[in-house]
Length: 405
Image (cartoon, rainbow, N blue to C red):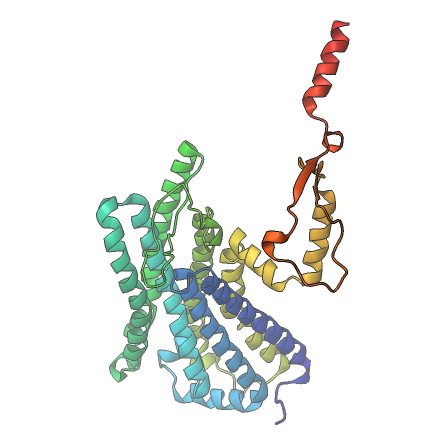
């Protein structure tokens, strides 16, 4: 099949594809790290799953656009003219057919990511402030964690289904409001919760100089431990946990990125409404290389979450240790082990002067059968004091005698 994308835009297409596949690799690596550290059902792993689906759908849409560029843009031109005034154009743009399905799949993932960050912020806030007390807090938080994670995936699906109702599609205010309600709630409520968390975090750090969030993970895979709890003392298995003492800072970075992306998505809807008016539409399809580069660049923000989730949550000490042990060549590790051995100071064995002697010295070279255990000559240990290391006290006594003399 001949690629219809203009030749002047092929370089941009290759760059976007390479970047997108790198983001896909980062999300896969984050999922592997989460499973390795027994956090396969945590918020960070659920975010990684969603981002993986999002990036994969974006790559599929990119390939579809690159291969059928002329055909897609021509059909989109007539599709927009036939559906002028449709509120769906403000959200999905001129996408139709397969591109429309891939768009709604990515839009579903965006809403899931927003809801996961909202419920995660709520879990952290309840863990920090403990409004129900420490005893009942742990029991209730486990149930709320399951309910919130399930709701984060179900609510966006219900939203997408409601957007397909003809009565909703015929009303621009209803369609736009319903399409942005989950993103708006996660943006508003999540920002308030994050502000409260940061206020408590800074206040406590000033008092104690150390304050961390502990996410206890059960050693038994059948036990469902809650993901929220507060502690300044990490257990013996803290080196194997995917979270560290910088969890609040890492979560803040991820939350700000997702919310900025949501704001840009809302602003793009306003721009699409303005550009889809009949008086501003072009008279013929635009299939130029400049338009192709512009459309391909628009895929970059959506796939960047793959790199973000790895840079934010995959750079803990435990994760870096796991990545190092898996990815670093064995030869490099052996060389470093040799260097460390050479730099290690030599220790004198306190039993250096003990030798094992017996009646018969050296190994048996004859073909005689081995005598029974009762007839074997017993070993005896002979100590040679002159070969033992000189104790430190001898030097101290000599120095003392010299001083007195």
